[in-house]
Length: 78
Image 1 (cartoon, rainbow, N blue to C red):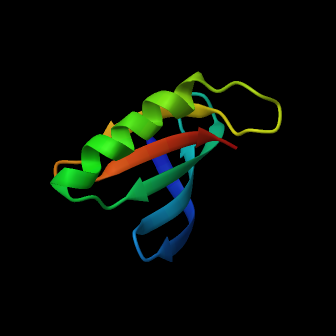
Image 2: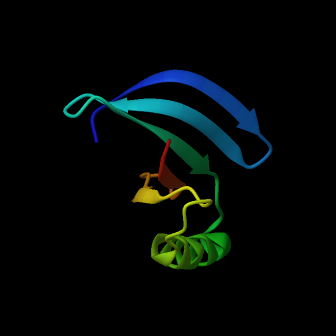
Image 3: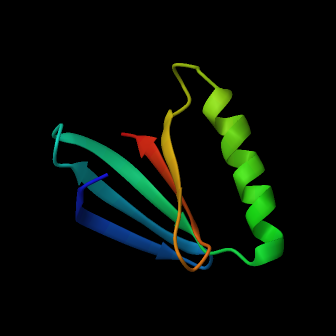
């Protein structure tokens, strides 16, 4: 995903950014979660469950990425 960051907030376990997919012009939220090796499996399992949820009141999961450091990024519909 080609992206440009517009806004960022930081919390104790990661950060949230508003990003733009340049190829389509669509905006998303990218939530980066800093994980340890033991937490990573749990976060990926959460992503798998989250990706199956489709409800008008729940934001959709667009993609899940893993950084070289092992952090997890949830790319969610805006």
